[in-house]
Length: 258
Image (tube, rainbow, N blue to C red; front, side, top):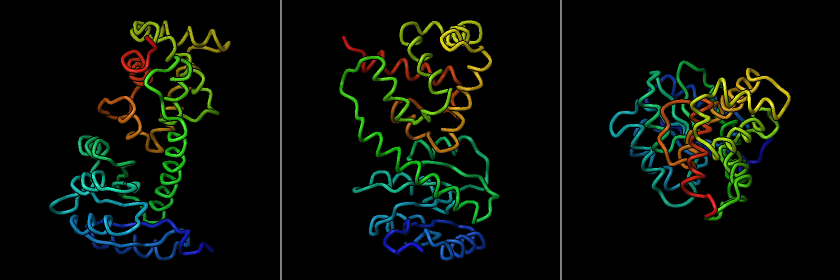
């Protein structure tokens, strides 16, 4: 049994009454969670988050005025340690979800999803983000970096799991793109086969492994990290070539040693 002080402190801002109650019931019966507050009002959600040691916030994007996006904006701008923010929504609206990521959401979940499944997912996201934050704090980049050090830093920052084959393939792909962005115009017949030669593999395996690594990071909520690292908007999950190109251009424009 967890001590109260060790439990993950969670705030719920959910407008739908029945779902709200099911979340509260599930949280109160979960030994790993401590309910700090619950509300269906956006202003009250911001106030609770500002006045309490909240670590995780569940935000309904369909909250009535001022709405879930406003809550995200206010929490992002608040002083102190920002809690992990997970949005939930009744609509599979890519535009709203992209806006939520840009305003500070760490992950976005579409209903229907039962309360227990949702809480299991958000606990995984919180732990993933906690480890990511620690790792990034331990490896803050200088103004200029050697290419290999930068690539390792960038993949750690996202983060891409280092134990996956796709991690090594992405390392080489980014290095090639840094030297010549033109390789991204011939990904299938140029980049993938060239990476495959480095590992005695095949182009199709390279492509699949890269996609798997990016998909896994995406499922764990890498959107905010990608945006903050590359300083570019996120129009949905990036393709292999978009991901590689964004990292390569960042190095060329910002971190390359002159």
